[in-house]
Amino acid sequence: MTMTSSLNVVFKFAPFSLRQLQVLTWWTPDSPYHDKDAIIADGSVRAGKTVVMSLSYVIWAMSTFNGQNFGLAGKTIGSLRRNVVGPLRTMLISEGFGVQERRTENCIDVTRNGKTNRFWLFGGKDEKSYELVQGLTAAGFFFDEVVLMPESFVQQATARVSVEGGKWWFNGNPEGPYHWFKKEWIDNLKDKNAIRIHFLMKDNPSLSKKVIERYERAYSGVFYQRYILGQWVVSEGVIYSMFDKKTMVTDLPVDTAYEETYVSSDYGTQNATVFKRWSLYKGVWYCVDEFYYSGRESKREKTDTELREDLDDFYSRNKLAKTVPIILDPAAASFKKELQAHGYFVKRAKNDVVNGIRATMSAMQNGQIKWSSKCVNTFREMNAYIWDSKSADRGEDKPVKEHDHALDADRYFVYTILANKSGFVAW
Image 1 (cartoon, rainbow, N blue to C red):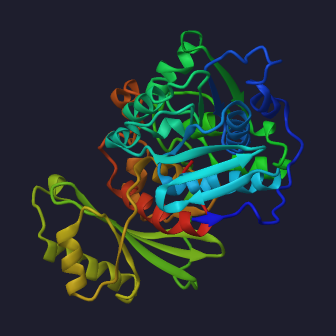
Image 2: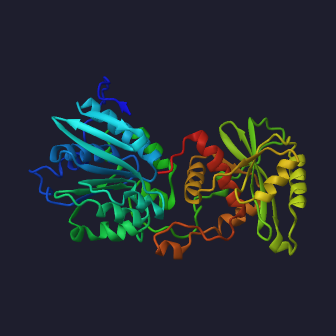
Image 3: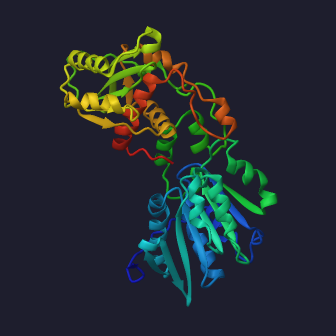
């Protein structure tokens, strides 16, 4: 248990925008929306939604109730503490609230003017998460990044708000137009007795024009429409439609003094096995060389030993020591053992497909990655790697699992190495 109410903490508020003021006051007696049961704040990233939604939620709770339970939910409790609880606690203390956090119980007691309410923390990461909220009687529930949560969890959590005068608070960035939250809540505001406030980055007064322009450069295609324009649009067509050979393919001299090197790999038996060399030069990562072998196309599957021997040749022709890390497809358990047994330093790839695609798009858009003309299989896949329309109809973002082996190796490198170095955030 940690007492923080005695800390001398000051939170510097920027002047609120019109939409932020609407969030802060929608529930007050003078507001035309005070009788609504729910508020939805959606739109572009970094638009100032989370800070003002969480603050308004607690002020509403403390102004309206005493001795009640409330819910605070994120995709995980870790992300909730990082994105919501930390900034919220600082704001509340700065405004004179008493805040007592009970970390082992995953709850926070907030006190002011003789009133105390308890806020329980929940993670809604998968279909089993709904079990966590069973039995709770709550006067309100706040959902951060609600579109990342399963419908079963949100249904169970909203059902726990049974105290007279209770309200629901939803915060998140857009996904596809067939996402369950879009269909169930945003498309049914009247039936849900809800108010929706749509945010853009310009609604966050703390963002400078330079910062907004940097975010605009970071996204393209469907992700630009969603995370910059705040639109609920379907993922369709060629995924890396921004690929341009004229600007993204460069052959550097063979004697270039690279600063750092990794190898990334996608592994397959019938499907292709790919090795890609990535080397850093003057702030840009170049895919200097590629190896591509398809058991299906060659009509002969190679053993792990044979593929390791191919990797030996790949390292040899690129004059690489085995200490150069190879970022390996996390599904390649047997191949990992083969490589480690022969002295390779294997690093497990982060295999979050959609976030990896977003990070790769961002790296392409910002000129952080380029390819050698040797990467002929990569270029072939660029024009054939498409979004799965059937998944889009279900409200899911998934690529068609075809023509993706070289691009998976690229994604493993970008999301495992480059995204960490450049501070990519999975919104």
